[in-house]
Image (cartoon, rainbow, N blue to C red; front, top):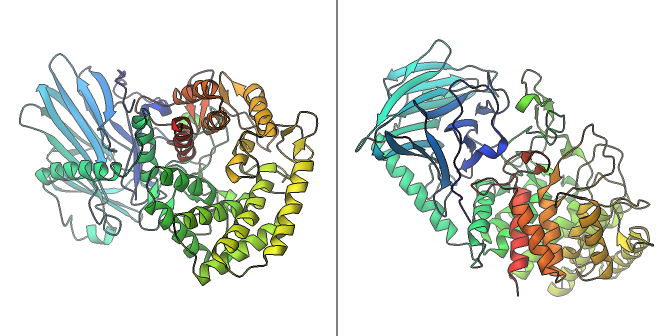
Length: 611
C-alpha cells in the first residue's frame, strides 16, 4: 500500500536524541529538499538547491544544526501519510480536545523549472475541536555553523540573513525572537482558523531592502492546493496498473523529486553523512548526480512512461562533458560542476555521533570503468524510442566506445567505489563489453560511420576474457573480480546488459549462491570482501530488489515474491527506503531516501508484474 496508518510517539519537548532515520519523510520541489519528522519538525533542509548548505540541519548536529518545529502543546497521538499521488506530507495530531492536520511541502507551479517559488509551506488545517500548537523556527546556515541575523518586520514576518543565504519567514502565526536566535510562537487551531507558515529563500541583497513579494496567508493555502494538483498531474503520467501501483508510484515520486529541474541531473539522495554503520565512519555526501544511478533511474522511469526525464539527463551529460568522452567522470554537481572536493566538517558531531561529517565526494576522481557502458546503454534505449544521435553526439559515442576498448583491461574502483586497491571487477568488465556492443548495434542500425569490425574483435576478446577469468570454473558462477572466489551482488545486474540471459545456468548459480552466501535475515549484502574501510555495513536494500528481479526473470516467482516482500518491509510507514538496513535492530542506515533503492524497487515490481 502507498500509506500505512501507523501511530507514532511524539518526542518529549526539548528531547535531544536523534530520531530514527525511518521517522523522516521527504518533501521537495525538484530544486530543494527537506526531511520532516513524525514529530512535525523539519530537521534537514537545503535551499535553494539539494546540494546547498543546510539552513535547517540538526540531523547532523542536534544542538547547533537548526530546525523548524510545529508540535502540539499537550500530549497527542500522531499519525502521518502522504496525500495520494503527491509529495505533500500530512502529520495528524489528535487528542481528547481536538484534531489538526499539518501539511508540509515545497510550493510547486507550472513553469517552476525556470522560476521556482523556492518556498517551504507548512499549513495546519482544523479537523475538529481545538488544539494548541507550539512553533519554533531556528534557522542556521552553513550546516549549522552560522547563526543568522534575524530582523523583525511585523509580528508575523521575519528575515534571516547569514553568509550568502537569506530566508523570509512569514504567515499568520505571530512569532517572538529569543536571545538564542529561535523564533517562537503559539497558536490555537479551531474551526475556521487554519495556521499558515512559509520559509522562502531570497538572495541576501534583496532582503537588505526588506521582504518584498510577500504572499498572503490565504495565498499560501492556495499554493498548497496548486502543489497537490501539480504532483497529481505528474502522477497521471505513470503507467503502471498492477496491484503494486501504490508502492511503485511512491518510488516514482521520490525519483522525480530527486531530479534537479533546471538541468535534468538526478541526485543519489538528498542527504549527506547518514552513516552506513551506526556510529561509524562510512558517511558520504550523496547530493550529486552519479551517471550510473541516473541511468538506472531514467530506465526505471522510462518503464513507467516518464520519458522526458531520460531525454533531459542525456542532454545534461552532453553539456557537462562538452562532447569530450575523456571529460566523463563518475559524478557531477547538479549544475554540471566537475570539481567536487571532499571536506570533513570537524565541528559537527554527526548523526548519533557518527563522524566524520563529509561534504563533497572524492569518488568524483575515481576510475570506474562501468560508466562507459551505462552511457552507451542509455543511448541505445534512447535510440529504441525513435531518436538518432546527431553528428556531434555520435562523435562523442565513438569516443566512449574507443575508451572502453582501451581501458577495459585496467583495474578500477567498481560500482561500489571501494577505497582500497583497484581490482578487476567483473561487473565493470561486463559494462565495458556493453559499451562496445551497443556502439556496434547503433552503428549497424543507423548506418553510421564507425570501425565496426575492429569493435567486434574487441568485444569478442572481452567476452573470452570475462568468461575465462570472471567465472568460477568449479561452481560455474560469476565472481566479484578476476582471480577471486568472492561473490558480489553487482553481478546480479549482468543479464540486464544481454551479456548472458537471466536463465543462463551461470546466472542461476550466481543468484542462488548470492541468496545463500550474502543473505542476512533474507536481505542481501553487497559483498563480504575487504573494501579499504573500517567497520561493517548493513544489508543493501537495492541488492535485495536486484535478487528479486533476477529470480522473477528466471521464472522462480514464488521465491522472487518472497525476496521482494522482504525488501519492501525495509521501507518506513510512508513507503520510503534508505540505502541500507540493519537486520538486527531493524534500523535504516545510510543516506535517505536513497534513489538507487527506489529505482531497484520499481524494476523488481515491473519484473514480477510481467506475465
